[in-house]
Length: 322
Image (cartoon, rainbow, N blue to C red):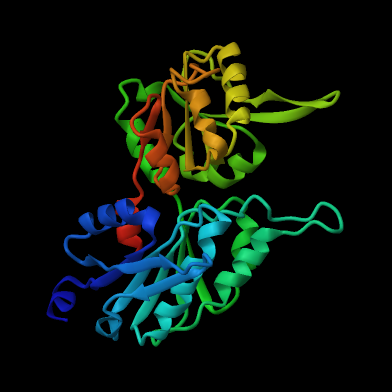
Protein backbone atom coordinates (compact mmCIF):
# COMPACT_ATOMS: atom_id res chain seq x y z
CA UNK A 1 0.00 0.00 0.00
CA UNK A 2 2.87 2.36 0.80
CA UNK A 3 4.20 2.11 -2.77
CA UNK A 4 0.78 2.85 -4.23
CA UNK A 5 0.44 5.98 -2.09
CA UNK A 6 3.84 7.23 -3.24
CA UNK A 7 3.52 6.52 -6.94
CA UNK A 8 -0.23 6.77 -7.41
CA UNK A 9 -0.08 3.40 -9.17
CA UNK A 10 -1.38 -0.01 -8.18
CA UNK A 11 0.16 -3.43 -7.87
CA UNK A 12 -1.44 -5.90 -10.29
CA UNK A 13 -1.38 -9.70 -10.26
CA UNK A 14 -1.37 -10.86 -13.88
CA UNK A 15 -2.57 -14.32 -14.90
CA UNK A 16 -2.29 -15.48 -18.49
CA UNK A 17 -3.16 -18.33 -20.84
CA UNK A 18 -0.42 -20.64 -22.09
CA UNK A 19 0.17 -18.99 -25.46
CA UNK A 20 0.29 -15.48 -23.96
CA UNK A 21 3.12 -16.29 -21.53
CA UNK A 22 5.82 -14.43 -23.47
CA UNK A 23 3.66 -11.33 -23.90
CA UNK A 24 2.74 -11.45 -20.20
CA UNK A 25 6.44 -11.46 -19.27
CA UNK A 26 7.02 -8.43 -21.49
CA UNK A 27 4.08 -6.64 -19.86
CA UNK A 28 5.58 -7.28 -16.42
CA UNK A 29 8.99 -6.06 -17.62
CA UNK A 30 7.41 -2.76 -18.73
CA UNK A 31 5.68 -2.15 -15.40
CA UNK A 32 8.56 -1.01 -13.15
CA UNK A 33 7.80 -3.84 -10.75
CA UNK A 34 4.09 -3.07 -10.44
CA UNK A 35 2.82 -6.13 -12.34
CA UNK A 36 3.51 -9.59 -10.93
CA UNK A 37 3.01 -12.76 -12.95
CA UNK A 38 0.82 -15.51 -11.52
CA UNK A 39 0.33 -19.09 -12.66
CA UNK A 40 -2.46 -21.50 -13.50
CA UNK A 41 -2.26 -25.27 -13.95
CA UNK A 42 -3.70 -25.89 -17.41
CA UNK A 43 -4.51 -29.59 -17.50
CA UNK A 44 -7.11 -31.81 -19.16
CA UNK A 45 -9.10 -34.81 -18.08
CA UNK A 46 -8.98 -37.98 -20.17
CA UNK A 47 -12.14 -36.90 -22.00
CA UNK A 48 -10.44 -33.68 -23.13
CA UNK A 49 -12.32 -31.25 -20.92
CA UNK A 50 -10.19 -28.82 -18.89
CA UNK A 51 -8.87 -29.64 -15.42
CA UNK A 52 -7.80 -26.23 -14.13
CA UNK A 53 -6.28 -24.93 -10.91
CA UNK A 54 -5.57 -21.30 -9.96
CA UNK A 55 -2.41 -21.31 -7.87
CA UNK A 56 -2.33 -19.29 -4.62
CA UNK A 57 -6.02 -18.46 -4.91
CA UNK A 58 -6.31 -17.29 -1.29
CA UNK A 59 -3.37 -14.90 -1.69
CA UNK A 60 -5.13 -12.86 -4.38
CA UNK A 61 -7.96 -11.76 -2.10
CA UNK A 62 -8.15 -7.99 -1.95
CA UNK A 63 -5.66 -7.63 -4.83
CA UNK A 64 -6.03 -6.07 -8.27
CA UNK A 65 -6.10 -9.02 -10.68
CA UNK A 66 -5.87 -9.23 -14.47
CA UNK A 67 -5.95 -12.01 -17.03
CA UNK A 68 -4.21 -11.89 -20.43
CA UNK A 69 -6.30 -13.97 -22.82
CA UNK A 70 -5.84 -15.16 -26.39
CA UNK A 71 -8.91 -16.58 -28.11
CA UNK A 72 -6.90 -17.93 -31.02
CA UNK A 73 -9.29 -20.80 -31.75
CA UNK A 74 -12.63 -22.13 -30.47
CA UNK A 75 -10.72 -25.01 -28.86
CA UNK A 76 -9.06 -22.78 -26.23
CA UNK A 77 -11.90 -20.39 -25.49
CA UNK A 78 -13.82 -22.58 -23.02
CA UNK A 79 -10.87 -23.26 -20.71
CA UNK A 80 -9.95 -19.58 -20.63
CA UNK A 81 -13.54 -18.51 -20.00
CA UNK A 82 -13.66 -20.93 -17.07
CA UNK A 83 -10.74 -19.09 -15.46
CA UNK A 84 -12.06 -15.66 -16.46
CA UNK A 85 -15.39 -16.41 -14.75
CA UNK A 86 -13.64 -17.80 -11.64
CA UNK A 87 -11.11 -15.04 -10.89
CA UNK A 88 -13.57 -12.21 -10.03
CA UNK A 89 -15.29 -14.49 -7.51
CA UNK A 90 -12.12 -14.96 -5.45
CA UNK A 91 -12.78 -11.70 -3.55
CA UNK A 92 -10.34 -9.68 -5.65
CA UNK A 93 -10.32 -5.89 -5.39
CA UNK A 94 -10.80 -5.51 -9.15
CA UNK A 95 -10.61 -7.63 -12.27
CA UNK A 96 -9.36 -6.69 -15.73
CA UNK A 97 -9.51 -8.90 -18.81
CA UNK A 98 -7.07 -8.10 -21.60
CA UNK A 99 -8.28 -9.60 -24.88
CA UNK A 100 -6.07 -7.77 -27.36
CA UNK A 101 -7.69 -9.41 -30.40
CA UNK A 102 -11.49 -9.74 -30.42
CA UNK A 103 -11.64 -12.74 -32.77
CA UNK A 104 -15.20 -12.63 -34.06
CA UNK A 105 -15.10 -8.90 -34.79
CA UNK A 106 -15.42 -9.29 -38.56
CA UNK A 107 -18.71 -11.21 -38.16
CA UNK A 108 -20.66 -8.27 -36.79
CA UNK A 109 -23.71 -7.99 -39.04
CA UNK A 110 -26.50 -9.92 -40.69
CA UNK A 111 -26.80 -9.57 -44.44
CA UNK A 112 -29.74 -11.94 -44.74
CA UNK A 113 -32.11 -13.73 -42.41
CA UNK A 114 -30.32 -16.71 -40.92
CA UNK A 115 -26.86 -15.13 -40.62
CA UNK A 116 -25.44 -15.38 -37.09
CA UNK A 117 -23.51 -12.32 -35.87
CA UNK A 118 -20.97 -14.13 -33.71
CA UNK A 119 -19.38 -10.83 -32.67
CA UNK A 120 -22.56 -10.13 -30.72
CA UNK A 121 -22.49 -13.65 -29.24
CA UNK A 122 -18.93 -13.19 -27.99
CA UNK A 123 -19.77 -9.77 -26.57
CA UNK A 124 -22.73 -11.27 -24.66
CA UNK A 125 -20.51 -14.01 -23.22
CA UNK A 126 -17.94 -11.48 -22.02
CA UNK A 127 -20.66 -9.18 -20.70
CA UNK A 128 -21.68 -11.88 -18.22
CA UNK A 129 -18.34 -12.11 -16.43
CA UNK A 130 -19.17 -12.01 -12.69
CA UNK A 131 -18.78 -8.68 -10.92
CA UNK A 132 -15.85 -8.50 -8.51
CA UNK A 133 -15.77 -6.68 -5.17
CA UNK A 134 -14.52 -3.64 -7.04
CA UNK A 135 -17.38 -3.60 -9.52
CA UNK A 136 -17.69 -4.53 -13.21
CA UNK A 137 -14.84 -6.14 -15.11
CA UNK A 138 -12.62 -3.86 -17.19
CA UNK A 139 -12.21 -5.31 -20.69
CA UNK A 140 -9.24 -4.12 -22.76
CA UNK A 141 -9.49 -4.69 -26.54
CA UNK A 142 -7.23 -3.35 -29.29
CA UNK A 143 -8.52 -2.05 -32.63
CA UNK A 144 -11.87 -3.80 -32.68
CA UNK A 145 -12.95 -4.47 -36.26
CA UNK A 146 -16.16 -2.44 -36.41
CA UNK A 147 -16.72 0.70 -34.35
CA UNK A 148 -20.35 -0.15 -33.59
CA UNK A 149 -19.27 -3.31 -31.76
CA UNK A 150 -18.53 -1.27 -28.66
CA UNK A 151 -22.30 -1.10 -28.19
CA UNK A 152 -22.65 -4.89 -28.17
CA UNK A 153 -21.37 -5.13 -24.60
CA UNK A 154 -23.67 -5.07 -21.58
CA UNK A 155 -23.48 -2.99 -18.42
CA UNK A 156 -21.61 -5.63 -16.39
CA UNK A 157 -18.33 -4.92 -18.19
CA UNK A 158 -16.47 -1.70 -18.91
CA UNK A 159 -14.87 -2.00 -22.37
CA UNK A 160 -11.67 -0.01 -22.88
CA UNK A 161 -10.88 0.26 -26.58
CA UNK A 162 -7.19 0.82 -27.23
CA UNK A 163 -5.19 1.03 -30.46
CA UNK A 164 -1.80 -0.05 -31.71
CA UNK A 165 -1.44 3.00 -33.98
CA UNK A 166 0.92 4.88 -31.59
CA UNK A 167 3.39 2.00 -32.02
CA UNK A 168 3.25 2.45 -35.79
CA UNK A 169 3.69 6.23 -35.57
CA UNK A 170 6.80 5.82 -33.42
CA UNK A 171 8.24 3.33 -35.89
CA UNK A 172 7.53 5.59 -38.86
CA UNK A 173 9.35 8.43 -37.16
CA UNK A 174 12.45 6.23 -37.05
CA UNK A 175 12.55 5.80 -40.83
CA UNK A 176 15.03 8.01 -42.70
CA UNK A 177 12.48 8.88 -45.38
CA UNK A 178 9.75 9.66 -42.86
CA UNK A 179 9.00 13.01 -44.47
CA UNK A 180 7.86 11.13 -47.61
CA UNK A 181 5.52 8.72 -45.83
CA UNK A 182 1.97 8.40 -47.13
CA UNK A 183 -0.64 6.31 -45.32
CA UNK A 184 -2.96 4.17 -47.44
CA UNK A 185 -6.28 2.71 -46.34
CA UNK A 186 -7.42 -0.42 -48.23
CA UNK A 187 -11.10 0.52 -47.94
CA UNK A 188 -13.46 3.09 -46.46
CA UNK A 189 -13.81 1.04 -43.27
CA UNK A 190 -10.09 1.32 -42.51
CA UNK A 191 -10.24 5.04 -43.26
CA UNK A 192 -13.10 5.52 -40.78
CA UNK A 193 -11.25 3.62 -38.06
CA UNK A 194 -7.81 5.17 -38.39
CA UNK A 195 -7.66 8.42 -40.37
CA UNK A 196 -8.05 10.69 -37.33
CA UNK A 197 -5.17 8.88 -35.59
CA UNK A 198 -2.92 9.40 -38.63
CA UNK A 199 -4.03 12.82 -39.80
CA UNK A 200 -0.44 14.14 -39.72
CA UNK A 201 0.35 12.00 -42.78
CA UNK A 202 -0.95 12.45 -46.33
CA UNK A 203 -3.56 9.80 -47.11
CA UNK A 204 -4.46 7.51 -49.98
CA UNK A 205 -7.73 5.58 -50.01
CA UNK A 206 -8.33 2.44 -52.06
CA UNK A 207 -11.65 0.81 -52.80
CA UNK A 208 -12.97 -2.50 -54.07
CA UNK A 209 -15.14 -2.38 -57.18
CA UNK A 210 -17.01 -5.17 -58.89
CA UNK A 211 -15.86 -6.12 -62.37
CA UNK A 212 -17.93 -8.99 -63.67
CA UNK A 213 -17.69 -11.76 -61.08
CA UNK A 214 -14.56 -10.32 -59.48
CA UNK A 215 -13.88 -7.57 -56.96
CA UNK A 216 -10.78 -5.61 -57.81
CA UNK A 217 -8.87 -2.91 -55.91
CA UNK A 218 -8.73 0.59 -57.34
CA UNK A 219 -7.20 3.87 -56.19
CA UNK A 220 -10.05 6.06 -54.96
CA UNK A 221 -8.27 9.22 -53.85
CA UNK A 222 -4.79 10.53 -53.02
CA UNK A 223 -1.43 10.45 -54.78
CA UNK A 224 1.19 7.80 -53.83
CA UNK A 225 3.71 8.85 -56.49
CA UNK A 226 7.30 9.13 -55.26
CA UNK A 227 6.42 8.14 -51.69
CA UNK A 228 6.88 5.29 -49.25
CA UNK A 229 3.27 4.20 -48.81
CA UNK A 230 2.19 2.35 -45.66
CA UNK A 231 -1.09 0.39 -45.90
CA UNK A 232 -2.90 0.44 -42.53
CA UNK A 233 -5.66 -1.93 -41.42
CA UNK A 234 -6.88 -3.56 -38.23
CA UNK A 235 -6.30 -7.19 -39.23
CA UNK A 236 -5.11 -9.50 -41.97
CA UNK A 237 -6.37 -12.96 -42.85
CA UNK A 238 -5.19 -14.34 -46.21
CA UNK A 239 -3.51 -11.07 -47.16
CA UNK A 240 -5.04 -10.97 -50.62
CA UNK A 241 -6.41 -7.44 -50.28
CA UNK A 242 -3.05 -6.10 -49.08
CA UNK A 243 -1.27 -7.64 -52.04
CA UNK A 244 -3.76 -6.17 -54.49
CA UNK A 245 -3.39 -2.76 -52.83
CA UNK A 246 0.39 -3.00 -53.10
CA UNK A 247 0.16 -3.66 -56.81
CA UNK A 248 -2.17 -0.69 -57.36
CA UNK A 249 0.03 1.65 -55.32
CA UNK A 250 3.20 0.56 -57.11
CA UNK A 251 1.49 1.01 -60.47
CA UNK A 252 0.64 4.57 -59.42
CA UNK A 253 4.21 5.50 -58.64
CA UNK A 254 4.86 4.47 -55.03
CA UNK A 255 8.61 3.96 -54.54
CA UNK A 256 8.11 1.61 -51.58
CA UNK A 257 5.08 -0.09 -50.07
CA UNK A 258 4.85 -1.36 -46.50
CA UNK A 259 1.96 -2.57 -44.37
CA UNK A 260 0.76 -2.40 -40.78
CA UNK A 261 -1.95 -4.48 -39.11
CA UNK A 262 -2.67 -4.73 -35.41
CA UNK A 263 -3.91 -8.33 -35.62
CA UNK A 264 -1.88 -10.75 -37.74
CA UNK A 265 -4.38 -13.62 -37.85
CA UNK A 266 -2.93 -15.35 -40.94
CA UNK A 267 -4.86 -18.67 -40.87
CA UNK A 268 -3.20 -21.68 -42.51
CA UNK A 269 0.21 -19.96 -42.41
CA UNK A 270 -0.89 -17.48 -45.05
CA UNK A 271 1.90 -15.16 -43.85
CA UNK A 272 4.30 -17.30 -45.89
CA UNK A 273 3.22 -15.57 -49.11
CA UNK A 274 4.86 -12.37 -47.80
CA UNK A 275 8.25 -13.87 -46.90
CA UNK A 276 11.17 -13.85 -49.30
CA UNK A 277 11.51 -17.64 -49.29
CA UNK A 278 7.85 -18.57 -49.21
CA UNK A 279 6.35 -20.47 -52.09
CA UNK A 280 4.52 -17.97 -54.25
CA UNK A 281 5.80 -15.23 -51.96
CA UNK A 282 5.09 -11.60 -52.61
CA UNK A 283 8.25 -9.47 -52.41
CA UNK A 284 6.52 -6.15 -52.89
CA UNK A 285 6.56 -5.10 -49.21
CA UNK A 286 9.52 -3.28 -47.68
CA UNK A 287 8.21 -3.73 -44.13
CA UNK A 288 5.25 -5.59 -42.70
CA UNK A 289 4.59 -4.42 -39.14
CA UNK A 290 2.40 -6.49 -36.84
CA UNK A 291 1.75 -6.53 -33.10
CA UNK A 292 1.84 -9.52 -30.76
CA UNK A 293 -1.94 -9.57 -30.25
CA UNK A 294 -1.94 -13.03 -31.92
CA UNK A 295 0.92 -14.81 -30.10
CA UNK A 296 0.76 -18.01 -32.13
CA UNK A 297 1.38 -16.05 -35.35
CA UNK A 298 4.32 -14.16 -33.84
CA UNK A 299 5.86 -17.46 -32.75
CA UNK A 300 5.47 -18.96 -36.23
CA UNK A 301 6.83 -15.93 -38.09
CA UNK A 302 9.87 -15.43 -35.88
CA UNK A 303 12.25 -12.85 -37.37
CA UNK A 304 11.45 -13.49 -41.02
CA UNK A 305 11.61 -10.45 -43.28
CA UNK A 306 9.72 -8.30 -44.07
CA UNK A 307 7.92 -8.77 -40.73
CA UNK A 308 8.66 -6.68 -37.65
CA UNK A 309 6.77 -7.10 -34.38
CA UNK A 310 5.71 -3.95 -32.52
CA UNK A 311 4.87 -5.22 -29.04
CA UNK A 312 1.73 -4.14 -27.21
CA UNK A 313 3.41 -4.90 -23.87
CA UNK A 314 4.02 -1.29 -22.81
CA UNK A 315 0.53 -0.23 -23.84
CA UNK A 316 -1.05 -3.12 -21.93
CA UNK A 317 1.01 -2.30 -18.83
CA UNK A 318 -0.29 1.28 -19.00
CA UNK A 319 -3.88 0.09 -19.52
CA UNK A 320 -3.68 -2.04 -16.37
CA UNK A 321 -3.02 1.12 -14.37
CA UNK A 322 -6.25 2.82 -15.47
